Length: 316
Ligand SMILES: Nc1nc2c(ncn2[C@@H]2O[C@H](COP(=O)(O)OP(=O)(O)OP(=O)(O)O)[C@@H](O)[C@H]2O)c(=O)[nH]1
Ligand SMILES: [Mg+2]
Image 1 (cartoon, rainbow, N blue to C red):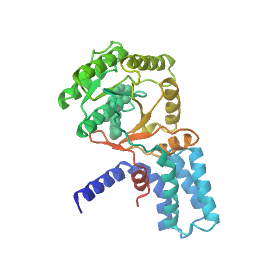
Image 2: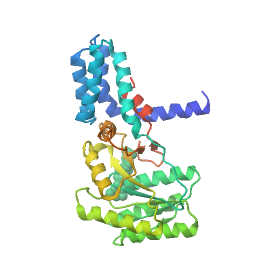
Image 3: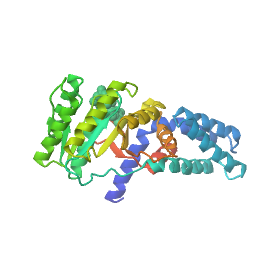
Image 4: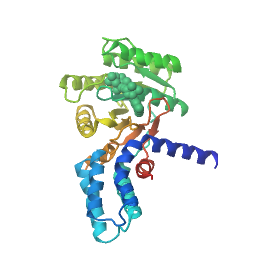
């Protein structure tokens, strides 16, 4: 195996390991089939429907998938577990494909990336991971400690910056978040830094005052460069299930979400939420999932790859 082959193999193993819990749910019905019954019938699809719902694929997306499989079953195209697995693979991959988009640093300098989301979603961790990734790609980064709500928040990002040699602009807790981010962007301009990654405090999408604060942050950022922020990334915890849909809607309405990061896909049994997110957006322009979090360390941020994702879900 060449170096590239080894890298791909390692990546495949990582996806597989991360999706173990979600896979167990989905595959159990297909797995039972292989060891038990020989023929695919309506009961099997019922089992599959239940598993998809358990992993948070959501009612509408599950209905659509099962309807297609039923059609194929009635046309006698699903003769055994393997053809069912293949058919499911095609359905799931097609559904997830519109979510995939390459995260690119455009030409603006500094390129400003704002991270938002509910409490504990994984924003600050994602900033650390993204900063690492961008450094490897040759971009210099500066972090804005825009979560001024808790003292520990600024400390968390300052400590990470110090140990990774990444500059951080912070004014500690109680400071005005918009002002800190504004400062960070001006600092990056002066120092010729490529990318500013701006942290924000976690907030519930239902809290109007906090959502208004986000629009203010956005307005203040636009004073440094009218095209900024260039990306507004909503970080979603894979474990929140169907609430992800409402998070996307509400944050998008409040500030305009340009892309998603689905964190904590590892260890979650609810990875099907990605299909739900895709299905919810079938009739509109799709907000992409740029990255998924596959672990807690700085290397565990992977571009969302629908093929790797579905392969990992259906791996035997
Ligand atoms: N397993 C796993 N854990 C993650 C991942 N991303 C974040 N975490 C963990 O989730 C917890 C919360 O992450 P933070 O990055 O602090 O979340 P946050 O959105 O900044 O939280 P607040 O600032 O409190 O709103 C931490 O314990 C992280 O280590 C991931 O992809 N996988
Ligand atoms: Mg945080």
